[in-house]
Length: 330
Image 1: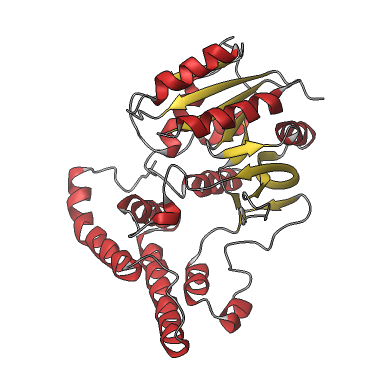
Image 2 (image 1 turned 135 degrees about the vertical axis):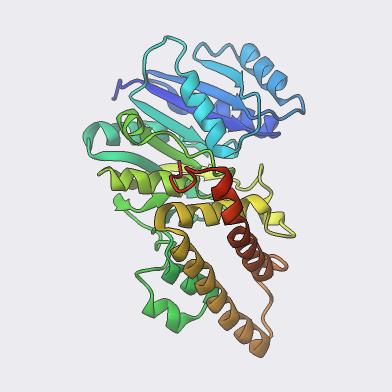
């Protein structure tokens, strides 16, 4: 059993009751480990901080504390706040475990991730198998997004998917431990040595794509990302973000997507990715009309995607004039 020092981060935004449930599951899964849990309230403003603080005090957990981020800077900023808060004993953790407030690890889930990192020094990131409330496995292991992947995903057309199978972003559900490009951030463990080398989450991303970017930076620095189906977590999903109930794709998703492609591939490639998505979406729309299929995208998604990119292109000269270092993204 590993005795590596571990810091667990649980980020809350207006989901205090759900977060308390996740904290109880995390405390159980931390048993036997040299671990502390920091619950970060991302400036909920709804009494969450006090409710969680009282819950921890009532439970009498000696290695759990609640901190206030002071602002809602998003997923990456909130988790960075918890990482910087560190352990109460002042000792630097060897691993950092990120857990969503609507995710509930099995009793051995954190042990599996910790032991894996102990045994695989070239692995910088390890993540869990995620199941939904019905017990079905979710897609949480992925290839890095590309222009070809944008076209494949938007077209939803079998022949195209077969032709571009190596560009399809979601991986077929892995049945054994394997390296992947990136993992969803609902349950992932990060090696502190890797974070010291590549930095924490890029806080330009408010929500979405931040874990994709972190895994890409890790890969470029020579660190491996591993998916471990032995570590299992139940995830309700989209409780804080409301993604399943979106009437329109929010601005922050569009901002994050564009920032990811621009930062990692350049402005020209980002435009190619958007145009590729539009081309695939037009194929889907034609098939949808012919076969009278229901729309699978949020209302006005394609229009919002294209309009967002056009606005970004028109505003770029002004941003560069105001910020001479804008080309050097964080």
